[in-house]
Image (tube, rainbow, N blue to C red; front, top):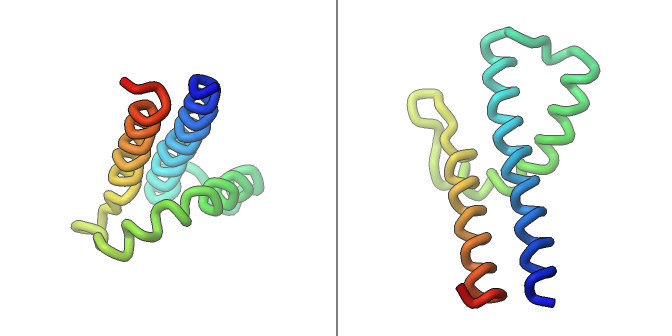
Length: 95
């Protein structure tokens, strides 16, 4: 039972990590005007990913401001999610 629970938690965290990475790349593409933010598909994915990741990134953004115009909070959130995954593995599986 613990293995299934760990698999579910690990999969969900992995999906959130993927969305954070995609949102970071998407923000770079928008910033460098490679893609148009007003495109309906881009806008809908941006809204979805922002709604999913903003609650995770907001606590980091309160503590750490952008450094030289670069937002490093997605990197910190990825590290924190990986740490949560390791803690869950230790607690649920024992290794």
